[in-house]
Length: 458
Image (cartoon, rainbow, N blue to C red; front, side, top):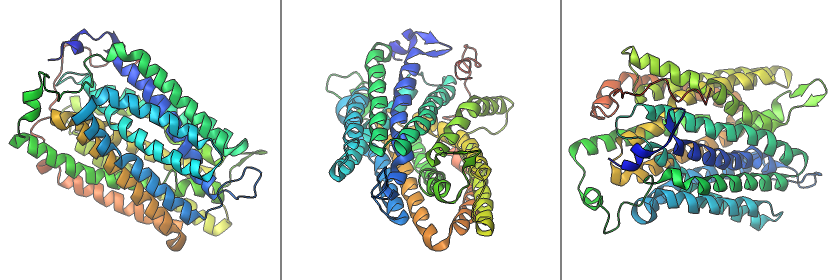
C-alpha cells in the first residue's frame, strides 16, 4: 500500500488532497462551462449587432458545437496515454491546465483565427487534464475504501459550483458586455485553478506519479499481462461506455439545442427583466449543488439495506430519469406550437430531471472506472470514458442539427422514448453484467464513520 495514503492529513473525513483537486476542477469547469454557455450564442449572433457574433445559422453552430465538444472529450484518450506511458497524471494535469489558460486567453482576441486556435488549445488542455485529475481522485483512497464514491460526489459538486457560477457570471458578461470579454473571464478562472493546484502539491504526494520508468517499484506490475478477471472487467467497462454515449447524447442538448430553444422560443420575461438565455445553463449545476449529497446519501442507505446498488444499476436508473426530462420539453414544444412561445418552467423541470439522472449515473461512473481499471491502464480507461462522453456530445450535436427538419417536438419525444427503453434493457441484463465485475463493487466497510464527508458539501 502507498504509505502516502495513510499519512494524508484528513479534513471532514476525506484526504486534504481531495479538496485541492475539488477547487482545481471547480475553476477548470468555471472556465469550460462559462465558455460553453456563450459559445453557440456567439456563433449564431448577428455580425451587425452591437455585440457582434459570427453570423452562422443554427444548424452550422450546432454542427461545430458537436464536433468541438466531441473532440474535447476524445482528446482524453491521448491525454490518458501520455500520463500512463510518459509523465504521470500529476504532471499531465499541470501541463493541461496551463494549455487551457492559453486557449481561453487566445479566445479573448476578436479575430476568427484566434477563435479556432483557442478551441484547439482548449481541446488539447482538457484532454490532458480531465481524465487524469479524475483518476487522481480515485488514487487518494486505498482499495476497498467505501468513501471513494462519496469523494467523487464531493468532487462532482466542485465541478458544478464552477459550472453554476460561470453560466451566471460569464454568461452575463458575454451577452451584455461582449462575447470576448466573457471568453477572457473564463481564462481568469482557469488561472485561479492552476494557482490552487500548484499550491496544493504537498497534499498530493504519491498520487498520480508516473509508474512506468525503469527504476519504478511498479515496473513488474505494469508489464504483467492482464488476468481473466481484469479482461472481464475491461469488457464490462467498454459495455458501460455505450450507456455513457446514450446518456450524454441526450443530456448534452443543454449547451446546444436547449440553449437555442431558451434563446429563441422561451418567454424569459420576469416583470420588466429578460432572463439571459445563458443563465439556464446554471440551472443544472444549481440543482446538483442542492441535491448532490441528498442523492448520494439515498444510494448509500439504499445499499446498506441490502438492495441493488451497483454502478450499472444506478446508471440505468439515471438514464431513465434523465429521459423523463425530455417529456417536459415535448410539452414545451407543444405549447410553442400552440401559442408562439413556451414557459420557462418547462426548461427548469427538464433540467431538474436531467440533474437527478446525472447524479445517479455520472459520479458513480467515474468511481466505477477507478474500481475496475487495471492499474497500468487507469488513465487510459478514464480517457476512454471521457471519449465515450465525447461521442455522446457528437450524437447530441447531430440530434440538434436534425431538429431543423424533424422539429423539436419530434426530437424531444424520440429522446424520451429511446433513453427509457435503453435503461430498461440494462436493468433486464444486470445480473450477467455484474458477474463480469467479479465483485469489484462489493461493499467493504472500514472502521471510519461512513457518514463522514457529507458535512462540507451540504
